[in-house]
Length: 238
Image (cartoon, rainbow, N blue to C red; front, side, top):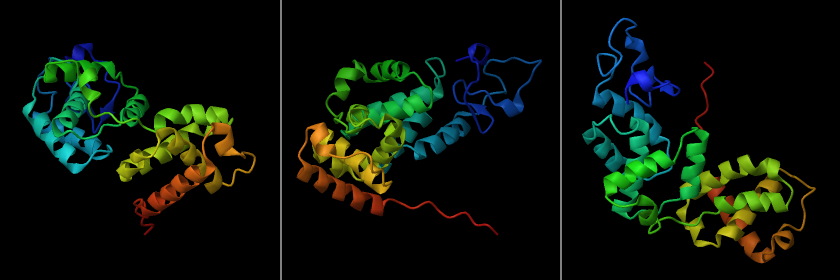
């Protein structure tokens, strides 16, 4: 993508994540295409590597994605960030790793990105429609049920923090996917309500049409996972 056509809306470390233009070396009188204003492929990949490290994928996926990104130097199709997203989808297929589309979709929405572009790019890399291919590895995520569950319990205002909790737990403990996704969604809501001592929400299992004993069992699993989550490193005040 030429910087002439890019609004430079997403800038990190002084580099546009969509077109690759380095703001620190912008030349108002020079050529704004792929000239000196662009970082090398190695530098650009290193910027995206920071973002990749924060995504909820295992090391095998991240290593192969980085390898593919270093080989891919084509700026003509979409942005580098979108190409990275496309490669992530393809690598999951190649390694036959489970892919939680709901977590992925939420990440895209948080970055205000259009998911259809990477889907098209991934289809080109794969040589067939990626949407149908992903059906082989996409898991049904409890996150997809949380909106309805919070609506039933009239706690829709809690949806975002509960989704954040669920995303962290599911990324940390993949075995949670083994439970019924609707029941797991109800359990995440119940755990959050109990943890935050929200007393005006009662009869959660009955209202959601699930068995209380099953929900309580999953809530206990969630408690164990939360206890095992990495704790943030304290900031040194000195």
